[in-house]
Length: 337
Image (cartoon, rainbow, N blue to C red):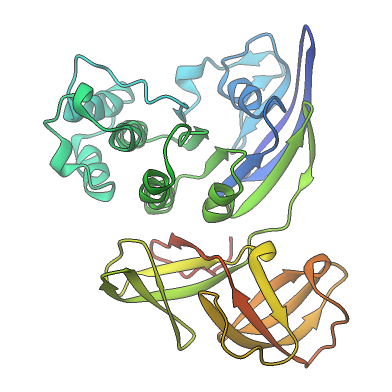
């Protein structure tokens, strides 16, 4: 059985045309990113069966959803869709919304309990939907979809309209939901920080077409040492950094290093204003990447973002001006995708 989502689809409308084809691994979170109006949401709708006038084929894990004379209706595709707006049922409380998701696909009540525990929805279960904050409503919407036991999760800019603090609260829940239940996800966003935080791989689109796969985010594995006043204290290969997230001691997280927010030095830079400075060395080189030995780990760094000449064996210092943390449920960040 194929372990990918394969599609080759097209849609023509007045003033807009879409033609996209890709083979997306059904592992982890794949971000689809591009400017507004590039066709990101339209692609998700086509793959979900919500644009029946679209042509082409869609295949999920070897199962034909569209093409060869087949068109599987949306409710039978096994796709959990989280929209930009929560779209919760106002006549049901939080528990009722979660239970609806499970009943819809014949999933047992135990799944609801697991989802509520994973997404920290227990204190909200008896709450009226109309009394939820924007962040709480998005978390419940994610929970309702996960309670239905989807084969794949589609997230269409689910953090739209939330402030930075609320986004930081919800992003870890998206990762936990995908990883804990082994459900691959397509995450649509044009916000670079969201993409770098969540994505295992990044597919770029523009003007109704796929422009290619971007460089994978650069990540280091880290372990939570303690929860402090300023957030969680992480150990990264013996170095420590405090980041403003809630995390329990012993948890495994990964830390994304945005390449454009990292200062690279070929000599010790001394004290800096960054979050952390890590010393490493250049361990190898390909046509497009450097392999760095950093904090006891190997990471691939885009060669295009390297200042000056690179010589295998040379020491390097990376000063991290920005760090984006992501929880890792049951695996290290450097495990194979």
